[in-house]
Image (cartoon, rainbow, N blue to C red; front, side):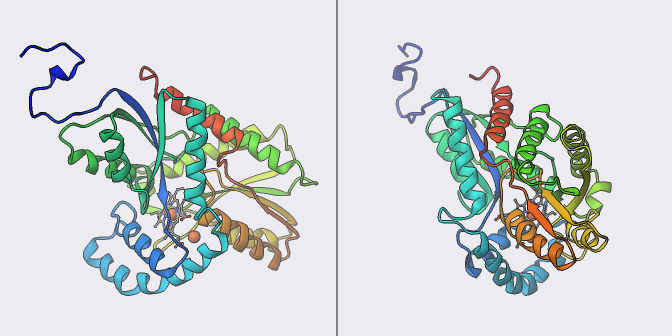
Length: 345
Ligand SMILES: C=CC1=C(C)c2cc3[nH]c(cc4nc(cc5[nH]c(cc1n2)c(C)c5CCC(=O)O)C(CCC(=O)O)=C4C)c(C)c3C=C
Ligand SMILES: [Fe+2]
Ligand SMILES: [Fe+2]
C-alpha cells in the first residue's frame, strides 16, 4: 500500500482511527461513597469489603457475614460519621484528590495530562484508564497515593488497572509509582508541614502520635511490607523532627481497627486514652500514611480522638491535617511524579 509514515495512509481501509502519542498521570486513592447516606455507603462498603485483598477470609465464610450482618448495620453508623465531615464539594477524600490533580496539572504543564480515579466507587479506574487510552494517552503513569505499600491498598489498585488492561487489544504503556515511605522528599514534606502546624500551638505538645491506618497483624507474617514501611517512615520523621522539637515525645500507633482479628498494635484509640489517663496533658496526632484527609482522619482522629483525650483528663488535643494539596505536599508529589516520568517528558 502506498502510504507515508505518520499520515492516515498508514492505516489500511477499515482500521479505526486511533489517536496516540500522549502522556498521562493518573492519581489514585481508595474511594469513598457518593453521598453521606446509608444507601450510598452500603454500595461503597459492599464493593470495598468484597475485595479479597482487603478481607482475606474465604468468600464462602465472609460473604454471608458481610451481606447478612455488616452491610445491614455499618452503613447507617458510617453514614452518620461521613455526614460530620462532608463538605460543600463532597467527600473530603475525593475533593482533595481532585485538588491534588488540578495542582499537579498546573505544575507539570500542557505536555502531560493529570487526572484522578478511585479504587472503589467513582470515578473508577476502569472508566478513567479507558477514557485516557481512547483519547490517545498511550503512556500512563499510574500513581496510587499510598506512601506505604500494602496488598490492601497499592496492590489492589494495580489489580484493578490490570483488569482494565486485560480487556484491551491495544494497551497503553504503563508505569506505576513505587511506595515512597522513605523518600527524602516525603520525609521533608512531612517535617515542614508538621513543623508549620505545630508552631502556633504553644507550648509544644507533650507527645506527637504518628498514627497510621492499621492492618490485620497476620499480614505482617504473610509478607506484607506495610508495617515495616510505617515503622521506617515514623523513624525517619521522628529523626527529622527532633531538631525542631527536642522535648516532644514521638510515638507510633495504628488506627481504624476493623473486624475481630488482631490488628497491628499499639492501637491509636487505646493509646490516646492511656496517655490522657497517665497524665499527658497535651497531644498532637499526625497521620503520615494518608495523602489526603478523609473519614478516618477527620472523624475518627480529629473528632472521636479529641473526645477520648479530653474525657480522660487531657487538656489540649490537636489533630494535624494531612499533606493534601499544601505546598510541601505538592512539592513532594511533583518531585516523585517527575522522577517516574523520566524519559517520557
Ligand atoms: C492509608 C492506607 C489504608 C490501609 C492500609 C487500609 C486498610 C484497611 N481498611 C479497612 C477497612 C476500612 N477502611 C475504611 C476507610 C478508609 N481506609 C483508608 C485507607 C486505608 N485502609 C481510607 C483513606 C479510608 C477513608 C475513606 C473515605 O471515604 O474517607 C473503611 C470505611 C469507613 C468506615 O465504614 O469506617 C473501612 C471499613 C480494612 C479492612 C483494611 C485492611 C485490611
Ligand atoms: Fe481503611
Ligand atoms: Fe474508621
